[in-house]
Image (cartoon, rainbow, N blue to C red; front, side):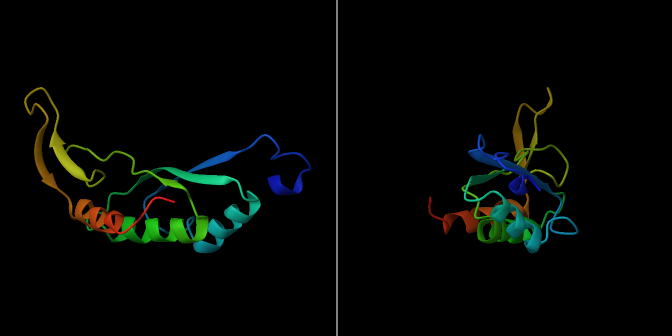
Length: 122
């Protein structure tokens, strides 16, 4: 809709998007492609992503789809450290009793670490 309004995107250089909890229903690849096309070559960043799925499959597929269909220049995981929930990549007890003690890394930490080792800047 914005791309059809004359001058609506003139002052926009960067578009930041958020994505949460997996791929469906709102995060299909046609929507990613339509957003990229609507932005007419402006830089796209995924500045927040999070999910409660601990295996890492959702985050890896989402990164791959965001890089391919959105062609984002930046991709950030929201809440990498989280106590006692599947939202974090690592589980840290950061209460006054835990003093920041690392409890464990979720499988998705290792999945994302493996994926990002293969990616190069740009």
